[in-house]
Image 1: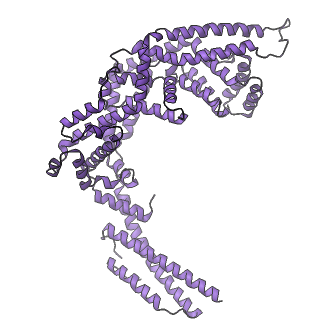
Image 2: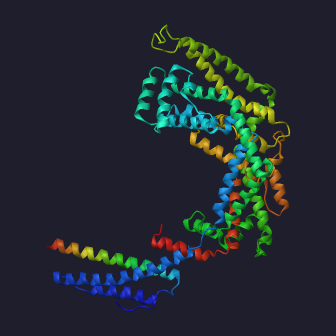
Image 3: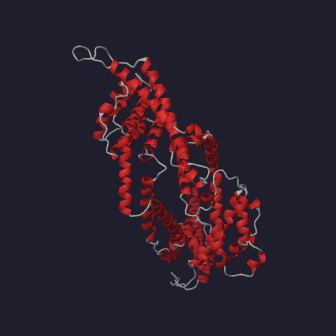
Amino acid sequence: MEKINKLEEIENLIEANKEILSTMPKNNPKNVKEYIEKIDEVQKDFSKYKDEIYKILSKRYQTSLSIEENTEIEDIKVRINTIKNILFLLSDEKNSYEKMELDKNIYKLSRYYKENLDNVNTQIQECIRDFDIVGIKLKIDDFDYSIYVTEYMETFLKEYYEGDINSPELKSKFEEIYWKCSDIIMHIELNLRYIYLKNQGIIDKYYEKEKLELLKKWQRSPEDIKRKYLELKEEADKILETDKRTVIDALISGNLNIKNYTDEKIKSNCMKIFPKNIIEETDNYTDIDINIRKFLNSLNEYKSYLEFKFIVNDIKNIYKEKEKYKKIYEETRKKIDTLEKKLRKLNSKSNKKGLFGKKTEPQTQTIEQTNLINEIREEYKNLDINEFYQKMYDTIDDNSSIYEVLNLACSYYNYMIQCLIKNNKNITQEEMDSKISELQDFVNSPYNTFINNITILEEKDISIIIKDRYKLLGFTIEKEDISPQSVDNLIGTLQDIKTGLNIKNIGINIEDINELINIKKTLKIK
Amino acid sequence: MNFKKENTNDLINLYNQICNFLGFLEKEKQSVSKEEKEEK
């Protein structure tokens, strides 16, 4: 193997070897054998060169990535999550039904009915655990809504305590009962709701006690805790966007497109939104950096507001008829109580034992019981939404802000589901859960400004408010730039500038990163 | 051999050239072997 110390020499060597090979004869087996031996020899030499270069490039790549992620990131995420759970329990918007998450689990129970028995049993299990958490251990005596519920839950509870709710025995029990009562899941749903209402006093007290203990432990008011939560979120964002390791990973993986963050691109983006002469004369973006961030935050807030405006409008319409809902929850509950008392009487009658303590005939449900249960089911559906309307009546007034209204909405799973379906009949369960999560993130953003200050009854053109504000800060924008059709473009430009400035501030060299990207591509590193 | 002082972009170019050349050699070897088998 010849010694090489210049890259050019290798290139020349390649040409020289190609030349040698092209002149070698291949007209007989002996020559062909020599030809192939020559190829083998050249292959061996060049494979060694290839391996040598591979090692050098690979080492350079690994060395550049040896920067550790800021350890504060994990720590702050844990703190944020802890406070999020605390705020959930401290929430005044939610009743105990929501805090137990029984609203979600019972909704999913009634929905999974159409999909998958394993999911149904999982949801029943979740509901039983919800009660367990608040100190109510469910027994078979609690499941007496109908003879079918009792029969199914006898097997269910046995399997539950043995740790296998997907056992063949339970599946076969379901099969057996289903043909006697195809509404069995609905009966279980109603039974669980009944258990909640029966124990509502105890459950409310549990959450009151939890709340007092938390406030005692933290020695702060709920408002202060919320403020701390928002501060931490803002701090987490700052740390993440200036963490060298996080940013480099995003650039190398392509999640951030490096072409958008060169000096030329930052400048050309700035020229789209500032007077050209100001940008041409400056090399230092420190002055405009903070305004770009504020503008970006306002636009993101506006975009989210547009996305969830249909909820604000829906609640505005409900609010117009506010007086209708003055006592709606209690009224619906009374109806349910009356109907359930009737059901209990009918159940006792049909469960009556014979003279020797044995039931004389095989038990079936009467038409009267069936109809009553169906009626109760409709009232419980009404109760779900009336609970929200009642809360709205009690807490929303003419001075309520958009924030307060959206915060209330995303605390009520059943209201959100109804509103989302009304807005889009084809929305899937996953999409709904995702949208609710998005709304919760929006409502809990530390950067919100106008939704905290504009009331639901004010008819203001928010895009003009934003445009005027940022024009005063020197941006060259018009109302059309903030229209629903164009706002994404403007957000994209501002985001690219912000990221580009972050990259400069943390001292990442774009050329160096380009090299790493090329190494990754060339060596096919995953 | 001492490639350590070379800059990254040059090394990447060279690596690609060597890979191409190795590919060429392998193709050549297989083509010649195939021709020989056919003649037999």
